Amino acid sequence: MTAALARTGIAAALLVALFASAAAAESAGLWRALASGGHVAMIRHAYAPGTGDPANFRIGDCGTQRNLDDTGRAQARRAGAAFRDNNVTVARVLSSEWCRCQETARLLDIGAVETFPALNSLHGRPENEEAQVRALRAFFRDLAPDGPSVVMVSHHATIGAFAGAYPQSGAIVVLKLTGGGGFEVAGSIPPS
Image (cartoon, rainbow, N blue to C red; front, side, top):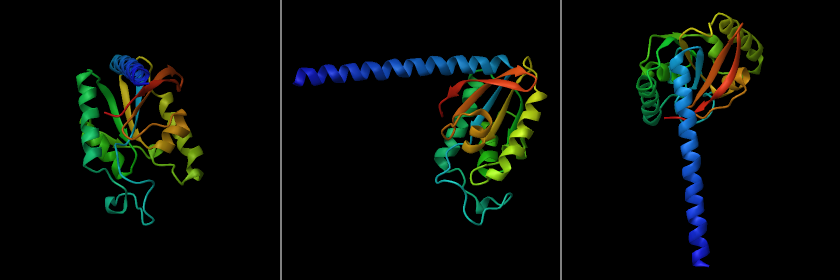
């Protein structure tokens, strides 16, 4: 029985190593794609403990919002270092108006941060989905598939409504621009 358990443990360790190697290769390819331009990196804000927002939430008042903690700040800094380490130059860095997104975008330290209301949270706000997705599609129509990549920092529900991907905090969904406002989901880079 002990030998069988040992073989099972070895097999499990080999599978974990195989999956980790495949994930690293996929991430490396996605970083190369971002560096080559013609892509959008949609980043879910870095780790902010909890879910949703407090009842007294107000845009522009970070004291009423769920914000990054030290773990989230370190995560955002590591993501920014990954952009620099992979020689990704971006045309623009856009962010939701939520404080946790703006702080994530600033801590990336890869360009000036502009707020873009179409990236705002849709969590608990389904009435805003159609207008925000329409605004994002209009923005994408102006992006050139041969231009520099763009970074957008947003929220789980918003990225899901637009791209059909539901990333973890700090994860990057890479979208390949296909022209005319179209895109394909190229893949996801796990949180740093």
